[in-house]
Amino acid sequence: MAQLHAQPYPGDWSFHSSSDLAAYFRRVDKLLAEIPPDRLIHFPVADGHAIYFIHSERPLVLQHVPYGDAYRADPILIRGLRLSDVKLRVKQASRLKPMLRPGSTTG
Image 1: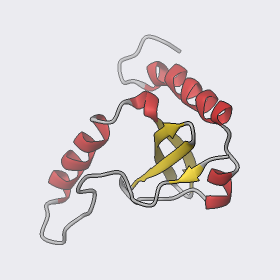
Image 2: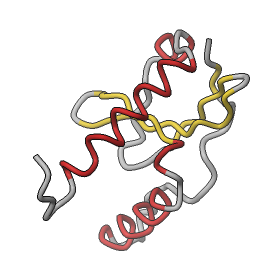
Image 3: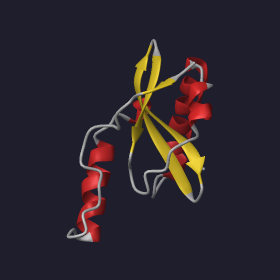
């Protein structure tokens, strides 16, 4: 069973009212790109997705990444995850990524 890390993933993910929206997206996109994709798991929520960093595998601890709208998955879902569930979801996402990449010849 997974646990939730008490703190969000480090970084300045907040939109500041004095910020330029384009600059905000460049900043948070860069923060997200710095996280190894094989350490991220996504869950569909509303019109987007919740992103979690796989903080550790034993014990399984997920850390919320407050990207964009900072959606969160239901804590009940997180607590019910097994390491095999997380590894499968990450593997599935890595297989889909080439098909979703602009200019890809796959798919």
